[in-house]
Picture (cartoon, rainbow, N blue to C red):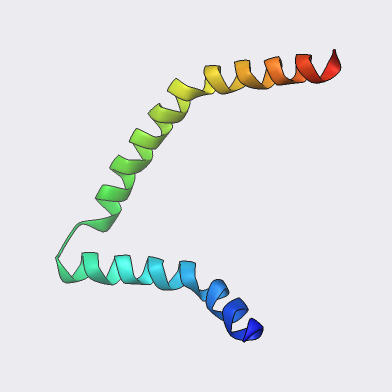
Length: 66
């Protein structure tokens, strides 16, 4: 039973990825174009959140030192 769970856990991400691609191709969605748009949005989100994350990491480091 444990080996079955390990086997399925190794395959869940590739199966999900393949399923999304097959669904997109069946609906004639321009997958690459949507990927590029999503990557640009993700990058802008990271640039918006980065200063907050850096500030939190500095604060936690200072608390751990003191």
